[in-house]
Length: 397
Image (cartoon, rainbow, N blue to C red; front, top):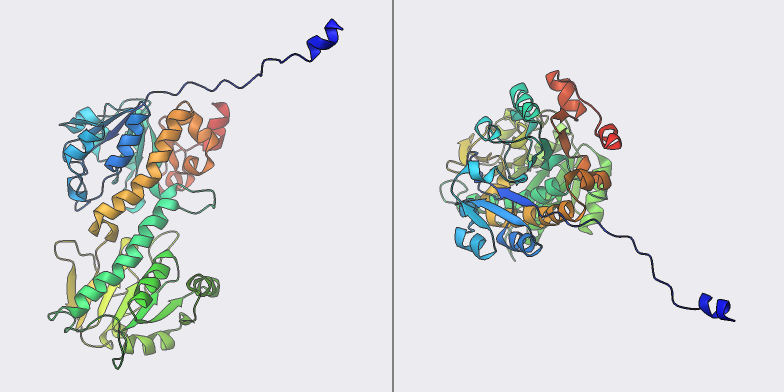
């Protein structure tokens, strides 16, 4: 009787004991790259990190170009420091542009760097300097999400696509460049004709923005799959075509705006529009070559900057500024911050960077340096540097 009643007595529940959260120190340095106006974390993300028991070091004026003041960061709980050297004492550094050699000198073994890689601008010295410091480095543009897409690249591409149409509208109406024409259309007026080369994320968002303003849109791409997918995403019928020189030239002759939105997985973007084609475009039309980040898909394009963003050739206005997202740094900074806030919290919650990337395949795919060991095969082959597979290193961990 007693034995049976004992079996019915409430027993203690055995629950897994989670690792204690690590109290982390995160650093946000001021960007030094030319015309890089974005910042990696907005004050709201800093507040969440601080409220979770972490420390955030922000270099003074780090958010100034993105219209976030030191006071906002201070009120969010960040500690404002007055030199890059102090910021680089943090365990994890989060910044937009890649580190320069003067910043790498501040690093210590075991630190983690989140930043863009911008591989075409790098050299062997950059990677060897990171290897010498025995740090881990994660590239924004290589991080994937659960859908196996690149979330940060996609966010910046969405911004670039939308912004490219607003830029085109600005210069189309400018009396000195676009001869005072309104973008879009209304009753009794022929609508603006927009030609988009590329049906990826930039092209899709450019098409949405242009259609929203009443323009007539034509999209060219080398992939029928991407064109079909674009039609489905837009949920409406628009003019689409495989890139055929004769068909493309015919549309270029009547276009008011051309958006270069091609992306190349490796290397330079192929040139689709020749100088001869540009010479046959309408006087006062506008080209926005978003592909200029990879060399441009229009032969007459050459890199400009935010101070002098346009030039005219054959009577056509060219806007060829790389990093269009930096033109709207406040919005772009929020997009980046919305991604990295949860990632940084996850690092602390899971007991550190190594534990986090062990469980998160998407972030692990962005790691190109792990404790001073190069882990990206493409980089290793490009610069002749030995590399190891990150999965094998994590298995050893």
